[in-house]
Image (tube, rainbow, N blue to C red; front, side, top):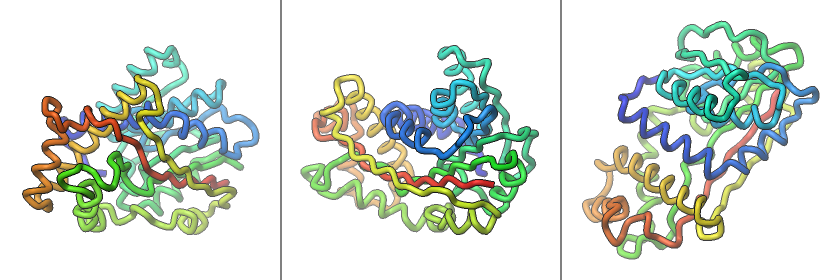
Length: 279
């Protein structure tokens, strides 16, 4: 896995936290759907980020203890701080590890959760085999993958450059194909090849309108859009036309009249695909 700069890591952490806040109900619906049978006692969150999956599992299974694994010490520090604040630090252990290299001792978990992490690995097939060997007999692996990055603006926005957001995402398609080749992989087939039995598969569609969410969550959607579009600008700037780049900068200017934070038409649209696979 790539090691990002501190600035990139902090921005990524902000996006992860906002994603967890805005999409909490959708994430809870995934953990509620999992065909676990007996409630797990030990779970592992692979590529945990700042703990979205960790805290969802802690909420879903009151008796579970979670080992949260990530390559970023900063993400793990933020996760531990949140666990302390929530009063669940005694149920969380963190482990810093590059999942493309040596894995730490993760025990024999009943449940492994891997959300938006496997596609970043150089060899996800190898990782799936390691998870199979790691799991307790009959243990469950939950794989959650993003169908794409969230969209926040209507298709006809902004008024001076309609379709800007889609053009930004399209400009990154070649980059992602080259640098993240496992995004969009057939995870069902990969799970079967690794020795799992896929027991369930579903797609969670997200289509939120910020104005319908109440003031606090609507404000969080604004921050989520601002942070995400800022990261998108950093990645797509060289591929955008000057007019598109100028329009995007107007959206990101928090002091300007065209700021994304001042728009009343924001939403969150995305999809998440989920596989539940038994060892």
